[in-house]
Image (cartoon, rainbow, N blue to C red; front, side, top):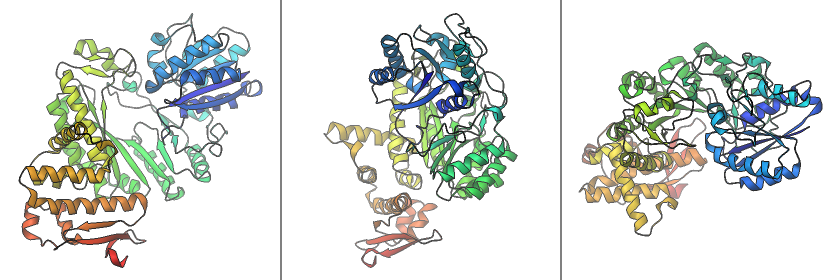
Amino acid sequence: MNINLIACAIEDSTLAFPMGALCIKAAVMTDPILSTQCDCELYTYILDDDPARTAMDCVQRKPDIVGCSIYLWNRPWFDAFVQTLHEQSPTTVIFAGGTEVTANGAAMWNDSYTFMVLGEGEETVVRSLRQLLQRDSLQGPGIITKEIRHAVPAHPENLAALSSPFLCGAADLSGHPWQGVLWEMTRGCPFHCAFCFESKGERTVRSYPIDRIQQELDYLVQHDVKNVFVLDPTFNMDKNRTVQILTLLANNAPQDMHFTFELRAELLDEELADLFASIYCSLQIGLQSAHKEILGRINRRFDPEVFATKIGLLNERGIAFGLDLIIGLPGDTFALFAKSVDYAISLMPSNIDIFQLALLPGTRIAEQAETLGIQHQPTSPYLVTSTPTFPADDLEKALRLKQACDLFYTKGQACMWIHTACDGLDITPSNLLTVFGSWLDFQRKSGCNPDEADIYMLQEEFLRVVYRKTGKQDLYPALRSYMELHQGICFLHDTCESPIVHLDYNPDDLAALDTMSLEKFVSKKKRLRGGVDLTIYQDDAGELFFLPADEG
């Protein structure tokens, strides 16, 4: 029996690794019955690939069974893929699993499918394939069919019994040039955030054994993997286990292996911060909103002072981290959302990821949408279109602010100097970003394409114009030098190449802008006549030093 598993990622990136489908492949490959009677192969695509064409390619391979890994972002792609596949090969058994199926399987059902899998599918798929081999009726936990239209998602209780995609050979890292891998150490979440798939059900967290994690790490190291995204929704939930794993990584992972973790800031302490600082990593932290009453509506607790104190542990150690915000939460307004942006920027994250609220089927917020007066798209990706406090026009304003933040703050790596830029103009970061968005629109209408411009040059041109129009042009040279200094340092860290920067002030003097107002700095520090060109270098200890460019 030939089985084709199909995965489709948003794009070819570090997050394109098809972990869900690989777990299913590993389960099939290591099952004592299926492994002797089935040939299981995984085929991966991205959204830019034509689903109809890929379906025709699948038909040419003549598989007996095709499994589809369906998520929020690839649902329309798979709708087209499955339709074409079934039309061209009506006898092929087609099944589907993934979070979109788990949340919305009954509504997704059509007769192109033979069965769908709800929940974590390793055990359900193996049982169903065995039943197909034996020509038995499809039945059991976590499955829906034409006859069985409702089921409870299945979740393997003992993760130690599941085969590792890395260790059993399902994920052949030597045979595919993945930009990075996804790695899971636990499943489940103890929190019940109303917008999340985990908002219903038991607050159970199941963990893989530490010895398996050790073996998988060894495998990743042997295959020279450089980027690892840890899938655990709250990596630092269990402190003792977190300490154990971070110590394992610090002692065994190469210095150039980068890890990304998702965690709760409130659970950080000095010991954990020190351990995160001991490895090459970045952290992603769900802030969602900076307002206690807004977060309370989605089952999250928040104390802005505690949160800021915990984030301070990361900044003190130079640990890269990002913050998440959501547009359109119940009770939120554009004014409150802008204040959330200001609060997030005040914490100096390296990136801010802003998402439009998606009312995912099966979540509490989706079930309460009518009561809350929330309007949203009826089909994937289920994005909110308006709320009683966040009308459509304000939603559009928030999305424009998001786009400006993505470009100016995150892509432009402005975390170290945006506060100085705002200080000189006496405005908030959200106001500055709103003005930047309007300026971008003007540039586009004038025939320019700022989306293709160098972001650093774009930032400098924008601020030069704003400072001139507000009569603050005397402050701009100091700001520009401070910006260029940090832009040069970012370039050095990103490329390991020494950049040349043009500064109107001594770099040691510019360090005073970390704590001094721009106006006071200009009144006290001496500007260099004609400026100076300096090359930035970094020694083996990580210390920065500057030499005149002509001496480089």
